[in-house]
Length: 267
Image (cartoon, rainbow, N blue to C red; front, side, top):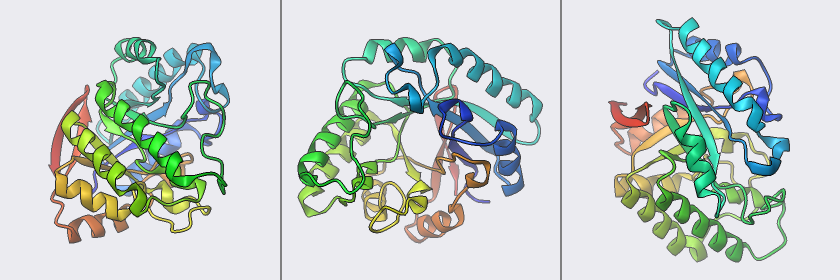
């Protein structure tokens, strides 16, 4: 498979993924991937939104399990240690300490909450409010994430479209400004294929939608393709379609990570 890596896989520790971690690894081997990486949802202080993430007391165990799998499957596939870090304004010091404590290969930064109380959900399905105002707040927060220096990869760029509102002409300026912040920060952006699994989307596409991927390519933003797998059979989901699209757009390389250092490999 020309796409060599899938860096966005979850575990049952987040309470909304299923299947043994070994099964994710084995499915990656079956697909011919060279690297797979777990990036489960990070703990937050005071058990904020703990129904969809690891507990603080489980973080050591998570790191130990990924390290064990790396050793067990050496020579067959490289198992990388990642984290999906929710960016919450005002928690930068807490997040920085969490990231400094462990030998991450990469950190995926995501925005799920637009209020610091972390109420669920920040964009309810079939959102009846002002879609433009929602995106304005969302992209402002994502720009803060890009500037924070906390992450290596930006997760599911336009995930707020799960509200039922697609970013359109009214959001074009915010989209461009956010992509420019990512480029200026020198970080990577994922093409997250889980969008094809989300039936509530009015136009199922990856995150970000393909027109935004084209903008990112024009800006020279490094890309990686991830499945956001929450079950073993979702590893590598829709990677063939993404290969075809990227080659058609003359994308010749993708990003890979090791000890938070990015290199590029030929697609």
